[in-house]
Length: 589
Picture 1 (cartoon, rainbow, N blue to C red):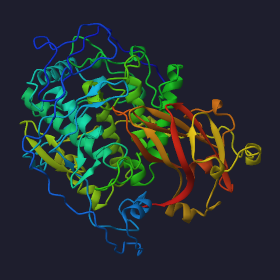
Picture 2: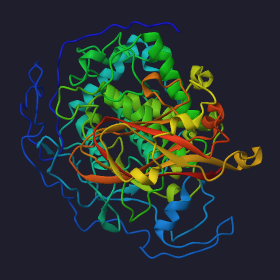
Picture 3: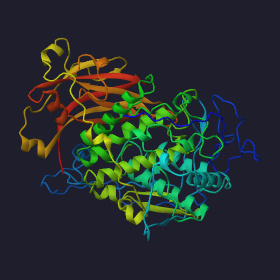
Picture 4: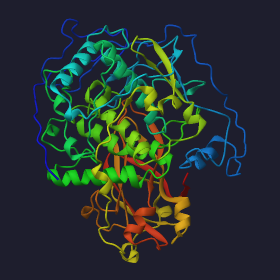
C-alpha cells in the first residue's frame, strides 16, 4: 500500500465553548481563548438550569410499563422486559418474545445540568428549550452526494469553513449556533434527558441500537443548517474516509488554523503524516505507516464482515422505554468509532477533549466528518453488503428531537431515517479495499491442551476486576456444527455484565486460542477485537455486554471441533469488572 503525506498546520486557535442559553462568554468581543495550550479548562463561567420554557410541555408517554405476552413468528412466547432482552440479540425483528410497544423518546422538558466530569469541572450541555416541537417527515426532491473530505476542492473547503464560521457567530441563544449543536450531542450522550414516561431512567443514544439512526438525524439537520446559512441547497457535508488508505490521515481542511474547521484540542502527535489507528486504545506507539494501513484494513473487515452477521450485532442491542442505558454497542461503535474519537482527542487535556470525550466531541468540526463515514458504513451495510436493517417496531418508532434550519424544534423517528433518498443525500460507491482483508490464523490447529494446562474454567475466575491479562477456558454448547446449522445461527462469544465508569475511557482486547498475545495483531484471526467505551463526561457507573462472532474465526483457526476455547482478556486503559462469559447461538434473519 502506498503511504500518503498530507500538509499540516500547528497554529493553535480555539474559540469559546458555550453550552446553555444563559451562558456568559469569557470575551464577548473575540469569543476566543488565548493561542496557548491550556490544561483543565473550564468552558463555562456560569451554571444554568436549562429548564424548558414551558415546563408543562411533556411528550405523552407512548406506553405504560406494563408487560404482555404474545406469540412471535417462531411460535414461542415469553413475558417481561428482561426475558425479551435476552432473546432479542441478533434476530433482526424476528423475536422470540414480545411486550407492549415501548419505543424510546426523550423528555426534553427537563434537562439535567451542572454535573461534574472526572476532573471536577462542571459540565453544562443543555441546549435551548425544545418545548413546542412539531413532527417532521423528510421528503427531498433532489439527492446530492456527500464526498470524501480529502478529495474536495479549495472552493468547497472555503464554502464549508464559511458555513461553520457563520454557525459560530450566531447568537448564543440560537440552537443553530455551532456550540449549541455540540450541546445536542452532549445532552443525548451524557444522560441530560430522561426517557419520556420514565423519569427515573436516563437516555443515552450510545451503546445501543439508537447509535446509528440518532447520529444520522444529527448530521442531517446540521447539514440543512449549513445549506440555509450558505443559501445553497446543493451543499453536502464531507466524510472522513478513514476506511481507505488514501484517507487514513486527518484530512487537510481540518489542519489549517486559519479556517473555522480547525480545533486546538487534538493530539499533536497525530497530525499528518501520521496514519490513523482504527483500533487505537490510547496507549500504542506509532508503527510503520504501511503496516498500520494493513492493520486498519483488517480491522474494517472484522467490524464490517465478521462480527455484524445479524442486524443487532451491527446496530447494537435494543434499548426499550424504561430500560437502563447501555445494553450493548454494535460492532462499528466499538471499533472504529470509539478508537477514532480517542485517536484525535488531546491526551494533555483532563478527559482527552475535544474528540476524546463524548460530552465535548461535537466541539471539533472533524466530528461531523468522522460521523459522516460512520453513517456511510450503514449505507455500505445496506447497499454493498446487502444486509437488512432491524425490523422491530420499537426501533422504528423510537424518536428524537432536533432543531431544524429555522431554529425550530422538530421530532423525528428512526423509521424515517432508513431511506436516504427521502433525506436528500447519498454516498459515492467507492472501492472497498478491506473486503479482501480477512484476518488469517497465526497458527492453525494449535493443540488446545497445550494452551489449557494451567488455564482455569471461566466460572472459576469470574466475576473479576480486570486489572491484568487473564486466560480461561470457555465451554462451547456444541462443536462441529453442520453447514445447515451454521447457516441458521451464528456462534457468538458474549462477555456479560461489564461494569465500567462512563466518565472514563475503558478498553480491553479479546483473543481466542492465543498463547502469546504479543505476537498477535488485527490481521490475525486470534484477535477478536476489543471492548471499547469512550469516556462520556461525568462519572457514572454502568453495565453492558459485548458480543464477538466466532463461527468464521474458529474455522480459520482449525478449532471447529474443539469442546472449549481459550479466551484471553488484556486490559489496555481503564478498569472494568466482568461478571461472566458464555458462548451462545444467535439465529440469523
